[in-house]
Length: 159
Picture 1 (cartoon, rainbow, N blue to C red):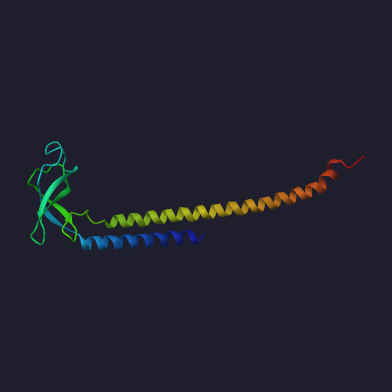
Picture 2 (picture 1 turned 60 degrees about the vertical axis):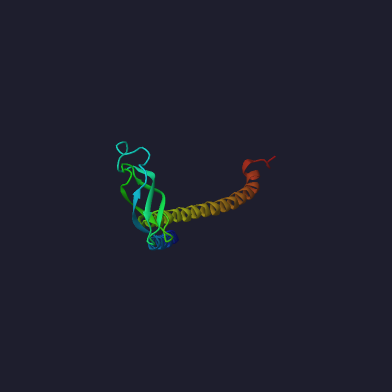
């Protein structure tokens, strides 16, 4: 009974802490810069909403002064030449945004719940196995006693 919450909490905390280390490492290694759209995203302005994200070519000047180009996710209503914010890694190339702390929290909860389900499942399976073994023993004893009692009880031995 006590093992279930302790296992779930421990596993959830460990998963959350591990994921937060990933979040902090990504936040330290990546930063946002301003880039310019080199082309209008497919679907074009007027046909897309600002909340829609599209892939489009962007260009930017790195911290070292070198020009870079790549394909990034941008708002669907942007037009060529528009400034957009993109994430770059330590090498100056495009990168995905860092994982959010809410993802780490979700991972912790998910791992905790999965652990709770696994521990509960193992406990129920163990209980069922013990019950099966005990029932087999009881039925074997009942069968042995019945073999002794049944002939006298049924009257088969009376002639």
